[in-house]
Length: 310
Image (cartoon, rainbow, N blue to C red; front, side, top):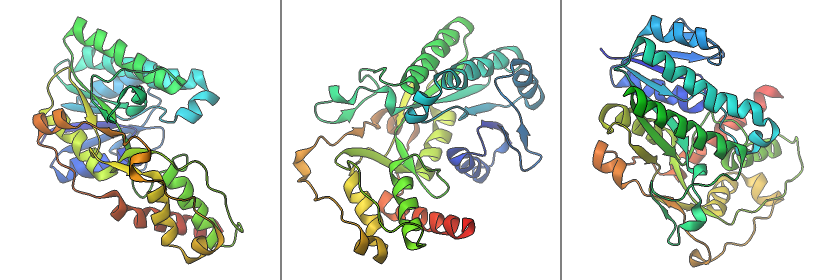
């Protein structure tokens, strides 16, 4: 039985990855700032010695680094923390692997926010798409990748990197478009607000169910080529207005008390999406879930949360 370590295991994607790995037969350990069982270490991975002790104690065969700060919006509020969590923490992980388990594979999670999508005239973003530094978050992920690739070359580390596109599912926190509107709808249904306004929903983006994304992470860990970057997404573009419209249609109250903006023609905007050809070729990955089928579970999770908080 292979031993896997997931950092950020108690988070949205981390908890999904834990289930994916356990179902695939891995002995899964975790690290996070909280812990709910004896397989998860409560640890501050910015503490270099603590990080090294963790890797030395567990000696994982494979590490999935999902720890960090994942919001461009939050990154503007605390630039220093964003850089520490996304750069320093990853360097600590890499140095601990060099010391204790130099043959182990590490999968570092990056973001589609690293891409300058405006350079994709047809909307298809490949791994060679130009990068952009338009937020502290993007700078932190680009820096993380650059410094780790430098360490990879110097020390011969076995690393893979992702550029992950939007993913959704129950348990995702507010701060993302689908979760923000799900929370608003749930609050409206509970009588906590009378109505709400819509922001700009006119863009097409690649969305995936988190279960597809974490299955892709496992496959990259198992079959990805050393040193490669992999787009992780559905390869399909969704109109954000349609996603939010589908949520609204699930709620009679939201349908009656709010007014969705008009839908633009399909050819009015660029359909941005991930080119997942390399991921498919190297790992055999294929998406299994349609995001529209995932939306009801997200809304229901926020309904339960709002009722519990009332």
